[in-house]
Image (tube, rainbow, N blue to C red):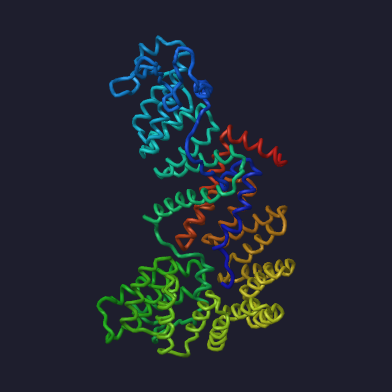
Length: 606
């Protein structure tokens, strides 16, 4: 509640994952990608080497003949006649090779003609006459299969945005020369343009491995391709997704920050119809269980339908009760990340019978969209309706806390604590503000006072454990997390849920790599305790990855993506899954695995 548990996860663990991949000979390239290579000036073929030697001769030879420059590598000019080509051409000056002509050439002539065609193709390429250049490179390939000829022709196709042919030609070049970095880059670029991101990532990984991880700027390119790929997956997944409630601990912490209400507007257990649905729904919410939240969600929907809210007006006798049902349905939709539906319900509730809590909820919706000015306006309106509503001050304090305005946050949390002494999170937030102000001993005292008041609540020791972790008191933090976990275990409700187990596991990993298995066992418990905990799953996936159990890590990352609330968090978790899949693919490639082993030996890792 008070400390960030997820948004910085990728940043905190990226290096660890990369190092794990390297140690496992799987995919250091999952996080270290390619460097941009400019231009194309291949000259590695045998024929090309011969021509290079000839280029150095510029003086007239006996008989008056002279060698042409490389831009006319296939042409000879007699002092008594026009320019002639080493190979036959058609009326347009393009190569005119037939199978009969080719079959009549010696192997030596084929090499010379191929080199000449390649050189003339280069001349057209420099003039940006790509279609003509393609004809020359194609002619060269008819005489001699050479990776350079494929590479040069692929460069022409790239200039013409013919990416399917770029991929075909670079593929042929790479078959002949697996470490052909220029072709790996060009093919990766075309794959990226065609949105075939896995293949682009694979080529970029190979490119980086062959380059010996010598250029650190390649990580930025990886992140670009990986993010595009992950965004595409998330967007596709979200098209037909069924929105679900988040983890029970998330639900619990949300409702615990509000004043509990069981019988609003005189509704009681004897009520009937829509009133009964509303009464039962509220009762289910405050059981603070997975089943209770799921049943409450259904009942609030039934209550809204039974009240027939579209037919009601402000003057309707049911208006105030229907508005409450709408408020809670909006809350559940908001927690399911359906902000659009939540907004519709809140606006309808305001139309019927707005209360302070209605505007507080709309403020949260606005803050979630980063519409802070609108959120502040809603808080002001809520105060005009009921200046003594503790809900206003707690959530206003939370907004100030998140924006770093600690003094304003403290003022509002103190007010919230005064008006609702049972809000345990107001105590936690005040202690956290004290700690952030550099007063550890005072914060410690505030946690101790809160623990006396909420002796059976796991909330206090869990968040105090986080403060101790940050302060460097590892032993003390373990003790607090263990206490919180024990208290949560005996409670019939959720409160902090799996957080103490997750926090302790994270601390174990930070303390020593030898404690990975112990941390993993705790995270398995966390997933069992709260099957919808995104943080538990993504943390366990990280442990699995560090233990080289990629097959177990991948589905955990994917599940975390589905459970994540925001689009950015979904993309982040999906990025982990897709990078891990790439690690697995790289490890299965014998050529790259061999190269990785060489790099490891060179760096003393094998």
